Image (spheres, helix red, strand yellow):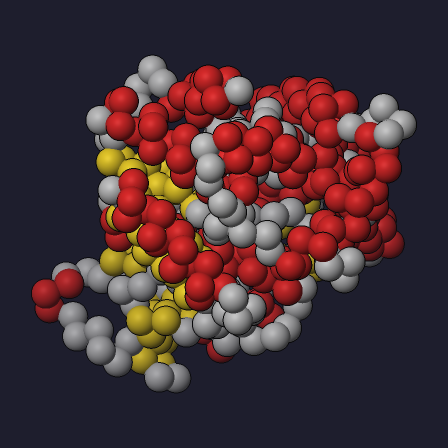
Length: 419
C-alpha cells in the first residue's frame, strides 16, 4: 500500500520535480498522510519541503492541532508555519468563505517562502462527495467533472496527488506507521452539506455506487469538459473581438450555437472581466438569457450585457466599480495598471484611480469613437485628483498616460479555458 501511495505522489511531480514544494496540513488523516508521503519523496529527490496549517479560529482545539502538526514537521525536519484567518465578517456561507480564505492565505505563504507548487490532500472520497453536492445543486458538466489533479489559482500551482486514493487507504497507511491523526468534530456535524453527502455516499456504496464509480463518472465528464473548452476556444477567435477590456460577440453567430456553447462563452467572458475564480450559477446565467430575450440588457456577477448594433457587449457594470478608488500605482479592479507620462516628474500622492463615470465622460468628447456602449465607457478607469479628471487614456483623453490590462487578449483566447 505504501508503495502505491508513494507512486501516486511521485507521478504528480516527476520527471521534472520542482526544487521546493509546499503542502497544506490540517492534522487530519488525508493531509497528514500526504505530508509523510511527500517527506519521503522530497528526501529522495533533494526537494525542500515546506508545510503550513491554516487556523480558521473557529474551534478552540484548532491551535493545539496546529501545534501538533508543527511538532510532527519538526521531527521530519520540515519548516512549518501557522496561518491565522481573522477576516471573516460572519456573512455568507461559512465553509465557502473559509475555503476562499484558505487558498488566499496559503498563496501568500507560498510566495513568501518561495514555493510555486502547493500540494493538497484531496482524495477519491472528496471527489465523490463533491459530485453529490453538485448534483443536489443541479450542476452541469463543469460542476460534475472531477477535481483537477493540478490547477492554477492566485499565481500558485495547486497539486492533488491523492485523488485516486481512498481515505481508508490513507488511514491504514498511517496506522501501519503508528502515526496518529486528528478527527475534526465538524466532520460528523450534519449541519454541513459535505457531512450529509458523506453519509449518503456510505448508503450508496452498499448499492454499488461507491466513490470509485462516482470518481470514474466525474473523470468521464472531465473529458467532456475539455472537449467543450476546445470547441469554444476555436469559436471565440471567430466571433469575438476585444476592445478596452470589453467583450463584443457577434449576435447572429452566437445564436447559431447550441445552448451549452453559448453559456460557456458568456461565462468565460464574465470571468475574464470580473476576475472571479468560480462561474455564476447556472440559474443566474439562465436568467441572463431570459432577460436578453425580453430586452436589450442584463446584469450578472458585476458585469453588464448589452445588445447593440448586432453585437452582444459584455463589460464591467458601473455600479460594481463606482466606489472603487485606488492609488495610481496599484492594480485597479484586479485588471488595470496605469503608467504616468514621466514617473519621476509626476507627483502621484494626490492622484487616484476610479471609474470615469458620467462626469468624467463629459470631458471625453470623442468617447463615441471607442465603439463601445456608453455604460462600458463610464466603467473604464481614469486618473483623478479629487473631483478633477487628470487623464482618461482608455477614453481618448490620455494626457500621455497609459493603461494596460493585467489579463490581456492572450489570456482571453488561451488554449486552456476553465470554468
